[in-house]
Image (cartoon, rainbow, N blue to C red; front, side, top):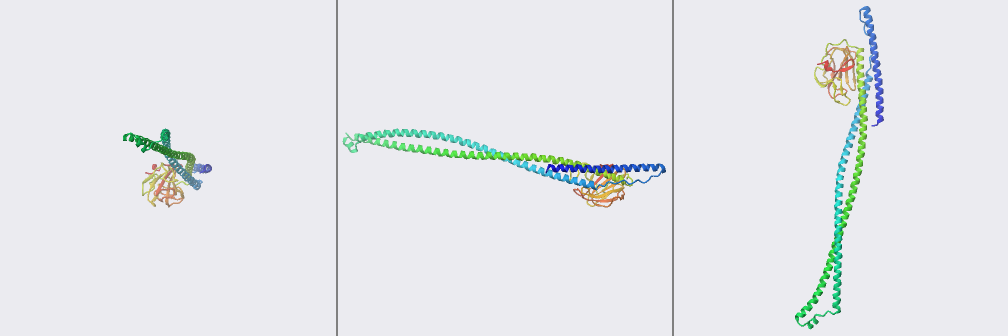
Length: 430
């Protein structure tokens, strides 16, 4: 939907309205001029002879062009409303997409916060593991220091025994003073050997245990580090996705604002076209008045009859209303009487038929002039039984109920025009 398109549409509307207004002014001016001339002539002859002369014919206004312009305006209004509906649907879709993204970002934020907590927990575990490894290293170093000292002491004892020639058990037996002395001396030698053996075994076992513990702690530290790195990478990916989706939200918001701008322009164009439609309808009413003055009925009836004998059910009253169907007026200029299709429509009062034709909005319709500036209108008929120029009497069947033109179902739209202005029919028919 282009702004230039609506500007051209507005310009065309202004030109049409100006031409139509000029047409009506000319017609009414001509009608008034001719009527004044006829009146002056009638007065002049009446004074001289006492007899009234016949009225001179007044030029009628052709409403076909007005009806075409009205239909063109209605088509434009329909197009604009369709465009407005499209814009509203786009805005709704964009708002929905924006809302979905906002919900998705909220979930991503929650996931990012969870990852941050995991990263912090892993970082704390890594620090604790490093502290354990440090302590284990110190324990290993202390064990190695003790083992080294024990090893040095053992070497000294072995060297002493070697240098002093460790006696055999036979020598101990032969040199012992008694059995107790032998047992003491042999037990002492065995104890020394056993102690050195045990200390060596403990040294090896302790060193292996500490080394295994250190290796295990280092493996756990490496695993925690890998988990932390993976969590950091995942958080970076989530944060990048949040940034991308946030940019998409900003793009949706820009599109929404742009669509609202288009909607505002379209609504302005719609108001302009509706204003033009009201002007055209007023011009059509003025033309109907001019035609009624040009071909006045045979006097006015003393009263008006209900135009639809089979039904008195009013489905839509006179005045403002919500639009019942696309193209229908929101300022109702008559009353709608619900009735069966084909039901008789009668002349509310005697007069002369000034219009009996079809239009896209009114469908088949009839206008009857009753004199004294009053005309009645009968719209949406399924059939017309009178022609322009026919003189009808009150109660005569002139048409049948239908649903032609802009209509939601079988009904009669009955209107009353007084001095070129639509008035409430309820003030004329009860």
